Image (cartoon, one colour):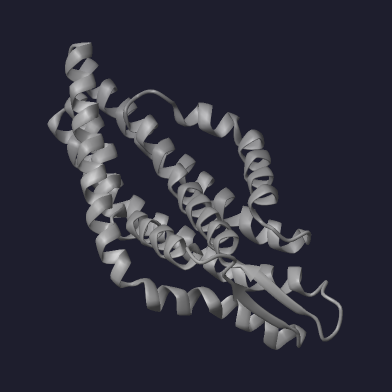
Length: 246
């Protein structure tokens, strides 16, 4: 495709992603109340464990409305994740043959549960993170957690974990497209582990090493899983080329 057609295709995908996010935000607006109940569970868990009061705090007259808008946009990302993940892969498919397009659909099918699985793991980490952080409060103290800052923290963790869990699928996609060999992926395993643990150290808000390790290990496992899939694919390609030469 010429450069202009690539740019037009990119614009089309951005418009479709934006439309999906708008529809997701509308649904998220009506799901705000159950979401708020879920967001308060880690705070309640921390309060029960530490014995201190931990409550959401709205600092201004418009803060509740602002939080609802942010929550709706936050939910839009998750509700529409199959749609925008498909659009990302659909932008690549015009350059693929018919067989490779089926692989792209398979990548979308794998990306959605991995994205949601990463977000779920972050949701498991959040209550323990809040409990550890609020554990530094003096006895009989009250922690007024700013609602907007708390939502930003939860959003950042869920999205970061979701994207991290999808990254091995992107590596497999690069391998299937012939842009990265399995040998290159395997040769970079030390860098992959370093990046995984660095990422875990940055996104986990707690100072303990155990949480960082529990976050980094699944990412490392997924990376080596991507290497394994790439090895199998490269062997299949080599056999196909050898058969064609004969």
